[in-house]
Length: 172
Image (cartoon, rainbow, N blue to C red; front, side, top):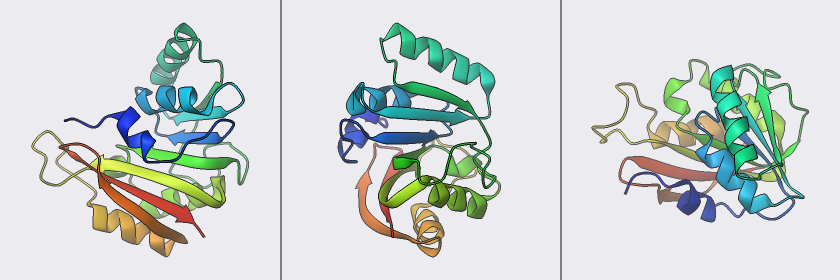
């Protein structure tokens, strides 16, 4: 099985009314599924540097009747680059982004800035054994080390599909 947003988000404890930030939202599969799970009283902020993907995501959300998605053109590798206020999020999603990040330490600090104390971070990324994945990958142990040194505690690990690993962290 390839990585399935519905299955992976089921492990993440999303609840009605929560605020979620999807960093590097890309095609928006996680954004759309999260928007369904947090309901009309919740909010999902889809952050990406690619305006065309964000516009397509805005259109897809409207087409599905999801009016709780906010599109944010921003830089996730710069502290404050998402343009969102500090401690805005109950949950943060970082799916298939770590392998693309040039400044992982700054990315982790931006996650920390956005997440409320006790909030959770979901990391989904390519495994090194995947033949479908990128040439440069970000191993799960490296992701664990990155976020633990930034003040997060590993909550759980799981198989996020045949080609992906899943990690859930709690902000201390």
